[in-house]
Every structure is written in structure tokens, then in C-alpha cells.
Image (tube, rainbow, N blue to C red):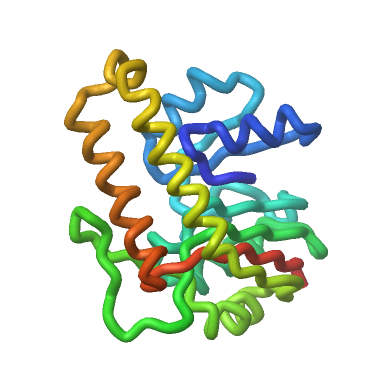
Length: 199
């Protein structure tokens, strides 16, 4: 199972030997794009908070969330839903934004709240939801490198990209990731990789 970054991450798993891959996202437009581009992946538009209505109990053996939980306030409900559709012993991989703890809400560039994983709470949240934490790895410095590389690629390929997307959309995309990079540099925001096992 996968969230969809326009389907690319789900397709990556298919190309690296995974036999049955489902891409899941709440946004139907993203799902429709992914369906048209990656034919070997099954895609569904599903709200993570009600994923057990779409998939059977003990359905998945591996689930990964790629920058998903930061957008969700009630993380325990979502993690519990994912546990319901996972086989005992299934692996959950979470790759997301993080903070140690937060007293004030973080906002993205559009003013929408970001709800990064709180590293001091996530182990308990996972346990309450039916998961045993296997590893928590801080990726904050790696996130900085990735975002710097992404923004440099955007600049290097600006002329090529402009032929496919509106200039205002490219500017918005760049500004969003510059904002995140700024937060990473100032340690307002971090990055984390978590592995957990279905209890």
C-alpha cells in the first residue's frame, strides 16, 4: 500500500519486485492522473481515516506513508485503521515531517496547518493503534539535502518545466519547498523515518 506522490513511489515498488501494489490518496484528481500514467499499480481514492471500509482485514503485509501524517490531526485513528487492514507482523514504514514537540501550530506557505509527527509522542500513538516500533531514525539533515537538490533541479530545468506547467504553478511549488527548507534549516521542522510492526 502506498500514498501517492502522483503515483511515482507506488510505481517504484512495482519496478523493484513488489507483486501487488495499491496506491491510495484522498484526492481523486491525483488518483486519476496516477491511473493514466502507471498501469501496473492499482489506485484508489480513499480517506485514510476510513481505509478499513475499502480493504479487508489482514489485507496488507507492508504499508508505507510518504509525507501523509503531517496533514492529519487524528493520527491514532488513522494508524488504527491501517492496523485493521494489516496482517499480524506486517511492516509499516513512515517517512514524514517531525518535531520534538509543538506548542504552536506550524503553517505551510498557504497558511494551512502542518501537524508534523511529534517524536516524543509517536511511539505511544503507534502502540495504542496496534503497532510496535522497531526503529526511529532522524532524517532532518537528509531532508535538507533532498530539498536543496530538488530546488536546484527545478531551477536547472526551469525552461523545460515551463513548457508543461503554468509559470504561477511552478512559482507556487518552488515557494512552498523553499518555505519548508527554511523551516528545516532553522530546526523548526525535521524529518523522520519510522519502522513499526503490526502487533
